[in-house]
Length: 395
Image 1 (cartoon, helix red, strand yellow):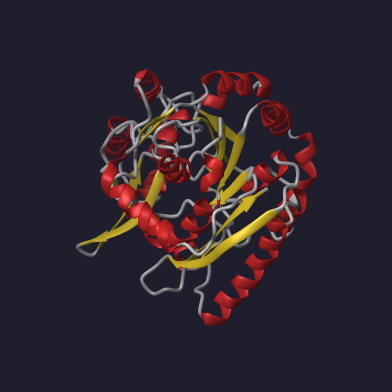
Image 2: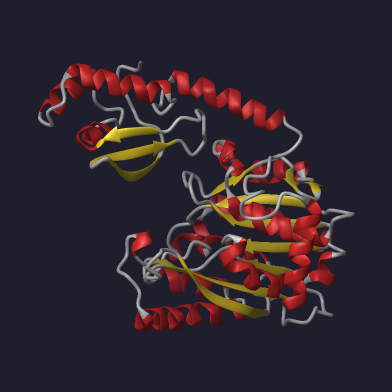
């Protein structure tokens, strides 16, 4: 046990059982399969596990919350057993899991059997039905980019299908696919890379390991792989890639999967060293190879499910109008104005595709876009929370 206990990055959600309130802790890296339910009176201890307090300090502080030393020790032991403390024990478990992940032949599918069928034939029949129902014709002109949702297929299927159907003919000749996906969990670095291949029900999509190494070297960030394990559960890259592989079953292209977090304010973009290094490294690929760039990003996340006020018909119409302004920037391929429009309102609508969409538009140097579909998907049982999504392609 460390002399200054510190809690690792964890997911926390409230839960009520038999009239008692708990905070359930889950490890996004799944170093342990266990979840830990912390009684509400003990939650105060978690706020003090910042690596700045000794155990004796914690004893003293928690007396104010009616928690005795034995209870402090009990909770610290449970956290340690679940690898939820930032210490040598969890660090060793992380290194072991990283090695297992990197030595595996591919990244395992995390959404198969839930979001989409794990069986290849069943999945193909599902996608075929979506393509048959799509209203957008297949493009006869070269398409260099696609904005794809990453919401579950159940809610977003039609929006996915319109853009992927439009671009289907172009996908057949692509050599390299660069995909910028929203980092929903890690967020400690602006970019997180992996050299691991991606499995789908159609086989394996090979990751361009040489390009991964080139990008990592150009950015010069030692910890660009620090959050690599978060690729295991991140659906924002997996779900568009399954669509891609459906269209390229026999001859899959190489892929470059990049998880993206926030990039900071608009005024800092030109001085963002890793961002500029990333773009400068990737732009020559557009000249040397037949490249498709994917921005995997949903739009607004608003309502009680996302800790904002409920939406009723007037508010949903207002959101539609706000999204329409962003969609105009997307169609114009205006990377900077798109980014600025969200930054100016402090991303108050929680647009999770902010960074991926900007990066695609910036890399393609302000391409001409065509939006194919838009929808507002329910995000709670009362239908007062929504996730808005759209899909588009770029010539």
